[in-house]
Amino acid sequence: MTLHSKREGIEKPQERESMWFAEDAILWSSALRKLGVTAGITARSHGSMAGSHHPLAEQAENRAALARRLGFDAVVRAKQVHGRDVAYVTAAVEPWPIADALWTDRPGVLLGIAAADCVPVLVADPRGPIGAAHAGWLGTSLEVVRALVDAMVAGGASRDGLVASIGPSIGPCCYTIDAERAEAVRERIGPDALETRDGKTYFDLWSANAAQLRAAGVREVEVARICTLSGGADLWSYRGRGPDGKYGTQLGFIGRPRLKAAVP
Ligand SMILES: [Zn+2]
Image 1 (tube, helix red, strand yellow):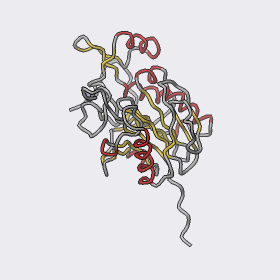
Image 2 (cartoon, protein in one colour):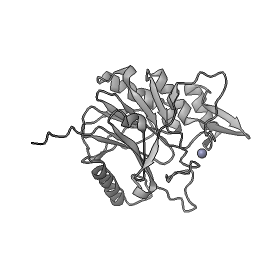
Image 3 (cartoon, helix red, strand yellow):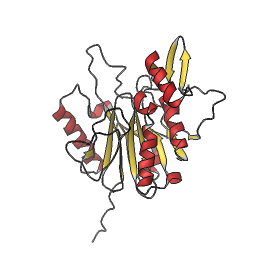
Image 4 (cartoon, protein in one colour):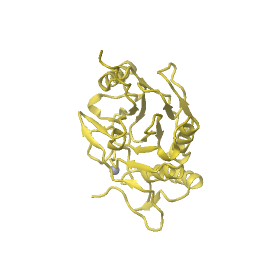
């Protein structure tokens, strides 16, 4: 079964086959692992990472536990507002910067993007800089991933050397948007990622972000193709929240491990 509808007449970005895999209750990007980067998304069994419906202290502890488990000191976060601002970070800071994308050129810094249906987009330059973006319908229509790539390149990353991975999110199988949002998407980025079926408009966040990454000069784009609502993985989904309205968020993460000191 494919979760992704191919459309004729639209030049598709060259996407590598999804090689995301599950291990230790985390879903991992193999394209980024090949670069020596720690990159993936947590499952529900790790607890909620940044949702507004869970105790903040509990979520802070869940993030700290994740960082420890992955071999980092802390998760570096931003206050996400569905915009396109990008923050350069070298360490965890409080209060969190207001941004929907983060990048760093420091090994040992673990970037975290909270999402429950929005797309975590993880990007790495094989030689150093890494970045992460949060792209829901609004961030995708504002092309937040292009802002991230431009900021990384301005900071020294090699544009055509970048590798990007589009993590699990609500897929084109499930993601309906209302007419007002569809019109905003159409105005900003055109109709290519919109499809009408059964009288509803579906927004393909995966193909939209992949196309934006390609347009920004990224040659290698991996798409996880795992839907948070219908994909069968143990993931939080805002659209799939229970009748009490409660939901949590997973954390898309990317970090370059510190070089290990030579054993004396
Ligand atoms: Zn789905």
